[in-house]
Length: 415
Image 1 (tube, one colour):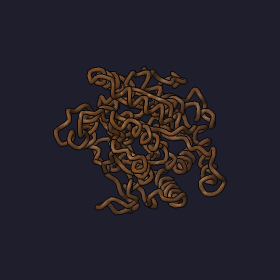
Image 2 (cartoon, rainbow, N blue to C red):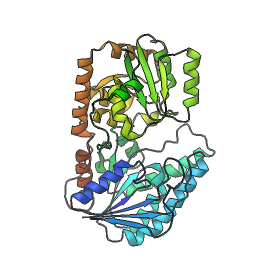
Image 3 (cartoon, rainbow, N blue to C red):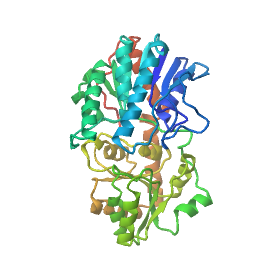
Image 4 (cartoon, rainbow, N blue to C red):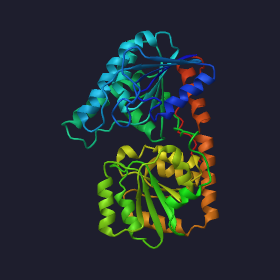
């Protein structure tokens, strides 16, 4: 097939889903054309050595990447984000007519950032069937009608038009299917395709002495949170839970984010000496740090839009055979429990999380290792790169009319 890929982010940005999909589809014999922007994430500045210009293409066997200019900028304000989204939409739409003119199907890595570009490109291409891989559903509930609220309304309307126009829709979490159907998608066209992680990096390893020294300071159980310290995670809950068990376990927070100062302040206020902070590390360092800890912590706040979210750190932990403690609701907790890959509790309940921390510390190491092995097996079965690309490839064939069977309404098997 001739397959187009539209993605706001693409390698060398940390965008391994569209990047690895493009490489794998090309390796399977398809001709793949990617349309994306110039790399600027997460710093908000175009990477050193890159210069935005209109005609920029790179070629390898069966894979072409076309980059178009967009307004770079960190997501510090609604206006900055929308300027970047809209500038990419304009550039992508102008380039798409010629670049995608003879593709058999179009795959869209559907983040909110890609929404306006998707609407423009689909309208321009007309009969080219599209497969959307929905990663997030823009939620306007609880947002006021100024600033974010106005853009949320526009984003929601654009998403509804796109869902109705798509030939097939893949959703990245089971409950997300209900959200996109409620937003206007045909339920017979929606299928679950769980995200995979960067398997070149995240796989089981044995920790070295340096990683152990960084993570562990005595024989106590170590629970690690690796990633963003932001509003969605609600890590104050974890700090309060750990503070109640200061002689039982250590909580190690690796990363940074908008809420880091507040979380650090709470740890200091509570005198939580067993809560330690480590600066953000390169992804290539993380598997050893995972292995040096006893559990990986996955936190999501109790928000309606997050119940249908499976954060990428969960796939990374499972791929590394790391047992998990999940303070989350919805799909994340269900996946952990059904895979028997760790422990879970309701979100934003520090007492319940403290109980899970205490139980985690009492579980013997061989049982923890078995949790990790079950999680790894579930990852390979349902979330791995080959499993995900198989499903996306079939959806592309269905969209192009190469196979007759409908996608159906599968929510997948998370066992």
